[in-house]
View (cartoon, rainbow, N blue to C red):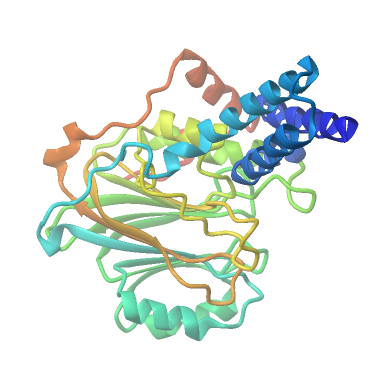
Length: 359
């Protein structure tokens, strides 16, 4: 038993330390994802150490100390996404309906044929903006049903799992489709007018993940996130970025995105809102995200029911309240962050100038 528990401790240490490397291989970057699951396993290991090992042995206390450190390290990353942490985005106070915007983000899964369930959720929750990821021509034909109420649309149907559609009740004054890093992975830009007349810059993104079936490294995904971040920091308008980032909220790359962009994460202090995988409750992570500038406060953010996709939809309601911007702040970059962001985009030869901006 001592040998088994010692081997388990060595494995836990490896799984904890490997993500500290900036190596972009999918195996290493994938270890950013299951921090909650690893935390639970480490807690079980600690209990087993305490129950089955000789408490008079120095080796026992060494194993306990190592496992405790690993547990604390895993929890350090995920605790901000619980109610134990202070909220990064202030709760919205009663405001004008004209200053509010509701966004639904839904990765539909191209092979999913349960479009009716998604359409029913759109009719029930009445989002101002709906973005679908992985939507091909079949999905576009089905989503024609929402265009009666959401007459503004930007459509990019693809059959490679990276199609994207945006539907809006609010006027879209400008829009563009850009392939920022990879030739077959689009992003959508839109300038949207709130009912109050305020203009909002929105970016919808879905970078390819690091995986054995996609990109063997995270370089492409990281570059897309960073180049968008470097673009929106120079903003004259309030900004919202949403989509399936194929990255967890607490990874070093997503944290770098937040630092460089200056955008806020409304989940901080509220919850993880795990949107993937819809079919396996024990293996879920927050892959679908929404970030926004300090101009907004949060009415609510919630995960909607499954509709046949491997992702749950995410529904977020924001209120434009620039007077409260001084009450809100995210995380600031240091010199190392700035240098790292430059290295990431230079390695993929991408530029923030390629990211569409409001005219």
